[in-house]
Amino acid sequence: MRLALSADALRRDPRPRWVLAGAALDLDFEAGRYWAGSSLNGPEDLPGWTAGAPLINGDGLVCNGATAWRAALPAWVRSPDEGLTIRADVTETPGAQGVGYLVILHGGSLADRIAMLTTRAAVSTRVTRDGSETFTTASAVNTYARYSAILGVKTGEGSLAVTGGSAAAGTPVAPPYLGLFEIGSFNASLPLNGVIHRLTLWHGRLSDSLVGSLL
Image (cartoon, rainbow, N blue to C red; front, side, top):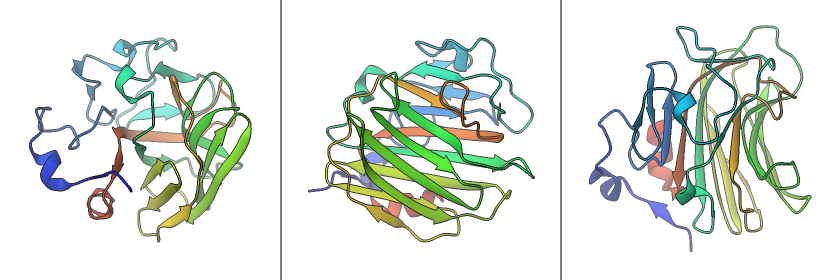
């Protein structure tokens, strides 16, 4: 049975009003607001942030492969038994080519990961456990225009939805235990080449209606 966080349940939420309902982690780089169980002065206040001062322009976190924007996941979202939902609000740099990571949750290597990647014409996903890839799907995006992508994953289920696109489904096995996340690359490889305006993570899979309201 899918765990679906409903809009009604999320409405009774103690988080600041700007935080997306029910989010465990909400990094609004564009507006300079950050939440990870409590309000932060900046992303560098996240546990395990190792990249130094973030490179932020007026639109968000700049991702060009020069730096790996890495931090530790909050402890209460590291075990994905009840599922995870990740939303990235992105603009890619015109002329960028090749595959790049929007965001990747991992355990220190690509052997265990939950990731969203851009192929410039589409967003695809990878869920890997013990080196075995179990979930791959893609959904087209309007190249170089601002878009949002939402990945939901839970044992035996997976879905990807993007702005203006149709939902794509997959069938992953149980996601791995993960302790780290990186924005815009993996160890500074496969860079996004663009800007992450906002990154949000929920513990649990969101209902389809709530996903639709976030796109």
